Image 1 (cartoon, each protein chain N blue to C red):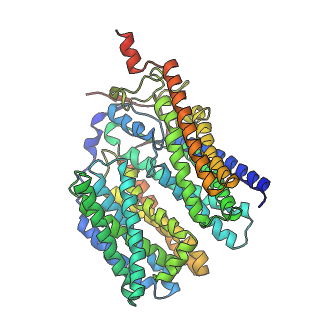
Image 2 (image 1 turned 180 degrees about the vertical axis):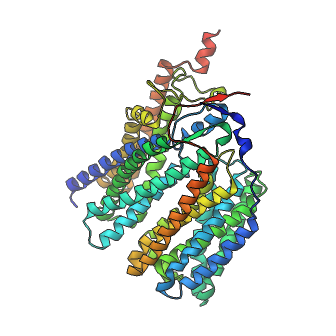
Image 3 (image 1 turned 30 degrees about the vertical axis):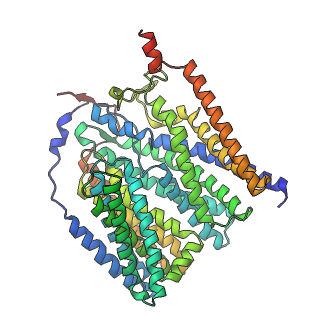
Length: 270
Length: 295
């Protein structure tokens, strides 16, 4: 079998996806999901929408900054931003509780996480001299998305966004579980599609699939906190995962060269 | 707890850590994660097409923290429902291996599809043959991480919760697998056609060996090769870390254990340096040796 090195020419130019639109969807859908899911434990499964939207926004931010060739630094950048986000959520919810404005605590946590991201971005850009123009914006975005993802996860798991629920999660160590599934959900899509023919749309499809996998995981953990109600979250997660994973695999197979088996082809050098 | 029971439990933790380390390294070799991955990723770009699994899940330490956290969380929930501990560990590790397989498949498909312009095909048989090996080695590694985390949590009354301990040990096993065993695959197996110890010239970047002893090379061959040295070396490293660290804090007072730890580190640094010098002298055409030979 001989393949041509010019195979890439067959790949069509894709429509540009607006980063601002994804950010807007991430913020609006996540906040609506967080507030509605906290009304009743029977509505906790609606936090799933927040998980998907925040994960999509975060994965898009990771892609934007990692396009500058950070490579293996992607997980480091993402972990730092998400660590900052988790710290900011703790601080925001605690301050909200102290001031007696728990209803506004998620907004406060979000603002604090954006400030944390901004500071990390400024340090990376101007002190560490990382010459990436979008660094400040993307770190702010990843931190903000990380905070929304973290809050969406824990409202889905516990049915509340209060500081007391967060304390319960921290006591049993599940807070780290939420941190890491969120981190991998956001970092994995671009990392998994890395290459010359990486396409924005395909990476975002994988972000939806990793978001759906997180819904399943959140559903499993919520069995402990919410009992049988968590079946709803599990079901929604399973359906969403089957649809999104199938879509990603189909798209990848369409864009790649798929063979069932065979020897290594000879490359036709031009 | 009496000292003999304590030492027995420390030995059990060391044994579990040894198996976890070895399984972790072989799993990452089957998936070409971490150290060897950059060369597998680069190969099609320099015209070297291959039938090798290309898996990158955000680096080994975060990936193993991910699997271990999933396994520990599921096991903890089952234990709270009065499940048998080992059944809970097995189910937890099984759930983690399912997610491992899902993430591994997306990483391979996604990355190979992104190398289309170089003509690199996505071989379905490569994916289907390698995934069970990846998932099963991942299962063994996470199961053992759960065992050692549980011993630390339940018998040594560690202040951290079980899930948190599994997370931390997951990061540790991933970091050790990445730094110790992967070098055996990344530097040696992938460049087996180069003289041992020659140091990799930039011109050879991405030009990995793709032909096997018979037929085409796959990652199953690489796991077989690495099972001889890289895997066991990783297992011993992780096992020693877990065993020696807990041994010193069990036998000595807190102040004394810090001194013992410092002495251990100094001895290991000296031993490593001696070993390195001995290896440099006895093996390989190193650049300075080559310069001498060429006059």
